[in-house]
Image (tube, rainbow, N blue to C red; front, side, top):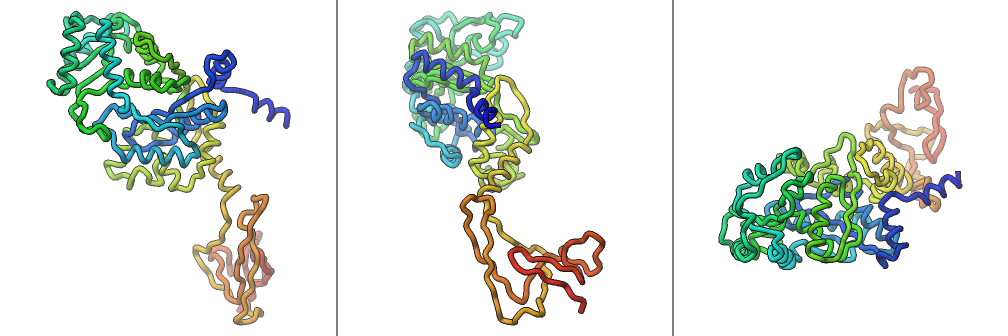
Length: 425
C-alpha cells in the first residue's frame, strides 16, 4: 500500500510534465502563471479548479501567480465582482504575487494595434457585424475581404485614432487583424481586435471608448507580464493560433498557452450567465445564496476551503472533457468536516424525562470530546441533572422487538452519562 501511494505521488499531470521539461531544459529560471477572471460575476466551483491549478503549479515549482482581471467589457463588469473574486481566491488559501488589470495595459495594447496597422497587418472595417459574419464564409467555404482591407496604413491610422477620439458610434467601425480569410480556423479569418463601446468603465471611467477584444488583449497581457505558462480550458484551443500570431507579429515575450479540460459537475449549473439570470430573476437571494454553486455560496453553506482544494486535486487535470459526480465533492466536504467539526448535541422534538431517584437541585458536569477524530481532542462540559430532554422518537410506550431506545422496562445509557430504566407510572 505504501509503495502504491509513493508511486501515485510521483505521477504528474500533463501540464506538470511540460513545466518540468521547460525548467530542466533551462527555458525558464522560474515559472509565472496567472488567474485571469472577467469581473462580470462571482466565481463558481468551476473556477476553483483553475485557481487551484494555476496557484498550485506556482507553489509546487517555486514560481509565482498573478491575479489579472480581464476587464475589457465595461458593460458587464463591476467593482463588486472584483472584490468578491479577491475574497474567494484568498478564502481558498492562495495569495497572488501581483494584482493586475487588462485596463492597466490599454495604452500599451493600443500601441500594439498601431504596430500591426503600420505593418499592414490590421485595418479599420466599416462593415456591420452581420456583414462581417457573412464575409467570413463557413468552415467549408473561404471568406472574402471587402474593400476596407485595401486601405493604406496611413488611412487606417487616422481612422483608428478617430475611433479612439469618439468620432464614431458603437458598431460603426471595428479594427480587424489581416491574416487569412481562407484559413480552416475561423478565428484567423481577419478577426476583430478592437470595437467601439461608449460605456463607463469601472476603473478607467470615460477615458476610453474603444476596447480590445479578448483574443487580442489576452496574449499581449500575458506577454507584458512575462507569463511562462498561460493555462486555459479546452474551448480556447482554436484561439491559440491567433494568440501565437499576435505575439509573433509584435515580436514580444513568447508566452505559451496550454489547455486543460474544464470542470463539469452533475446537477450543477456552471455558467456565470445562467447564474446571473437566477440572481436577477430573484430565484435566489444573491450570488452567495447557499444554494448557489458559487464559491461564496459554498462558503456560506459551510464547505471548508480545504475540501474544495482536495477535490480539485483528486479529480486531476485532463485533456478531454468529462463529467464529475457532485457526490465526489460532497464526499470530500464530509471527510474534511468529520476531521475538524466540533460535535454538539441538540434535541429538535423534546420529550421531558424525570429521573426519580436522582437528587433534586443537583447538577453534575460530564466531559465530552469536541471531536473524537482529532488526534489532540479538546473537551467540553455537559450538564446532567434530575430533569432532562430526549427526542420524542427515542421513546415508545409500546415498543416492538429490536427497539433499543427508551421504553417501559428497558434500560438505556445516556451518552457520557448513566444507564437508567424507564418505569410505568
